[in-house]
Image (cartoon, helix red, strand yellow):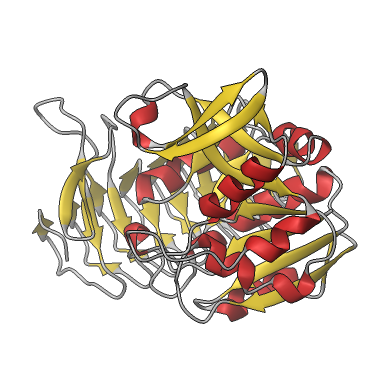
Length: 393
């Protein structure tokens, strides 16, 4: 089984985090988002990985190389974002025999991918409360009979989870016409396979489509929560580590630091002295958390710095962000309503009672800056000392 992993997209809904990094390469716990998908495919028995790349493709190539976990890796270039079937079609020269298609910006249970491969031809599905928001599978006697996009009257509660195991014949059906929204859809390929084969729906208990910043935060909450306690870095005798904390080799935790919850401290990171880190938090490679800083349930990307006497909660900080001393992130609305965030020009609900800021790469705040809940700071944005920022910048 070859596994085609789609990793060509920019991720406009997750901006500004994707300004210079393709969405599948954004950090989720100890590796990029797409690496969780590739790992699941290899664990399920894939003997070769084909990565479809496009936007900022070099970052994907640099990470996976020509071999990943002893599995050979090939690349196919999607020159335009023209849909999922278009992306797989770009990889057709690499396809021989049965093949799987997985989204590089989705998180799957590894066991579900193994079941998918074993049942080929098959499609992965997840039971949802509101199937009207998804592509929905119709089934009869354990076989998929149809797939309908966002139906008003869903035939089942089985939502398409965006993972497919196709027979070799499906390679001939990849060149599908554009849909009403102008894209070549992999679900149209699936519909042809359903017509010609008995397709099995394999279910997963947990699945996640990571498309927006708060979903990246949720993805980190999920995957950091699966890590087991490990302390390989330098930890002061005067620091306190509670629960399943991971401190990688090359990281440093200084005196007076308290870390509790499911926290990952990556290699090269430094924390403290006298800092407090809690919740499901990732302190990325070479990131710095200064004196008397509190970080709660957040992701600090590579090289991010939070200066002393600061608070960051329920936030995602891009690479090389520098929060000046005394920067405070507000993460809760006074009216108790879910925090709203701007996606592609529209202010929408995150569904989260607590959500702080999303800062793109190289954002810098002046000392004593106050940041409002649901704030978006574009890459390179700055604030002046003492500023209170209430609108996206």
